Image (cartoon, rainbow over all chains, first blue to last red):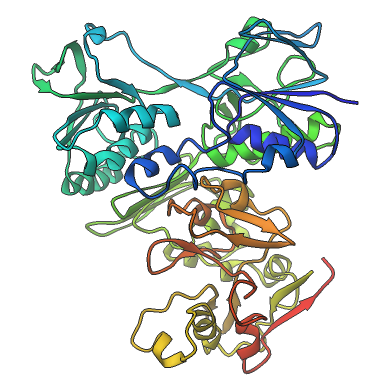
Length: 410
Length: 144
């Protein structure tokens, strides 16, 4: 009987468990969970602080999930070493776990640059885990002035989540715009305006060089006083276990389309990995929830002796702030089709007869049809893309393809 | 497994399915009270282009990407039907970003909703099918 070990207990691990069980109903599964919580999805922590969800509703799966899946979960434990020749994992308490197939779903960790004087700041937080959110919740007062370092997805979702719990929120970033990893300058300007109107202050192209207690000294010479500091500069994939075992890592653990690492019987999934980005044709860390679940599921099936491929990974994000929704997908290269109003913007990127990517601000209707063109690598010459530019619709496909899509006599 | 299928040859583009859907899911017994003068939030929508019209609702995919993409674990597949737990939904719209059919859309409160084949309401069978005047929407078993 096969024995499975999964390092990590997030969304990729849940996908992996379900993947294994779709093939192998009985082989023992052990999950190593550093956090003392049943599986939840990290993006929910800002919604928790915002009051849009709570501890109970945050559970990603039902309370009988691990029992139903016949999983043993070791809470509060972490893996410290993989002995791949012996097919063993050593835990922080010295325990040794043998495996036939191992999945590393270890996620990522906040990256904290070496700021001078950071140790003098008492109320300082990361914003990655539920425990981070609970600690931040405790520290916040209605009178708190909060400084968030980092205007990326994590920093801004944090800002939205805690705005009503604090007196003032300032977000700084070295980049010249908000959400620089997913938005170009024009789109970022619309989003920033909306965030400012909602009550967030920005210091862009500026960052803290030194901290002293309740004060940040900025590169620009400005000084920012704060009561609570949130560091959301960036994240790094947790690659050390594979690297130390002699496996191939780059910015993430390198995986193929079957989620295999370079080490025998070791698979990886989720934010710790670097896999294929279909839209750019390159290897990339695609640290988003849907890919984590799909990679985990694929890994699980293959670990259990099935045969599954996941080769449709692309960067894609749907994120909202104070009622404004932003969607992005793929890579931003090629010819641009654009529609804009004062508060909305749609940009489609077209190259080599393919839709390569898009950014939609306040234009989210039926966006999945655009996403499917990227993920399915559909030649645009096979459909009426001209009418598709204005509004996503399935009518642009040929009648034969419509029949296939809708299963019959459309 | 029975599914909703459409016949674009027979679809008149009358949008009655949208009204019947919104009414069936309103929880009310009076159609006028439920719909008159209010914006419509149906879970089915009529697509049209030139002479082509047909209704689109959730296909209840065999390998549903919405289920795998939901950050709240609010979308699940039970007995081959894809259901959404609106109480868990946080309104991030990721399911809208990934559904290849454009079959999910927010309700009047910004919470996501989708066709659940009328199994969660009092209708008992898909209201869009029952009310289609030209049998352009049917609910039947077909070979994949």
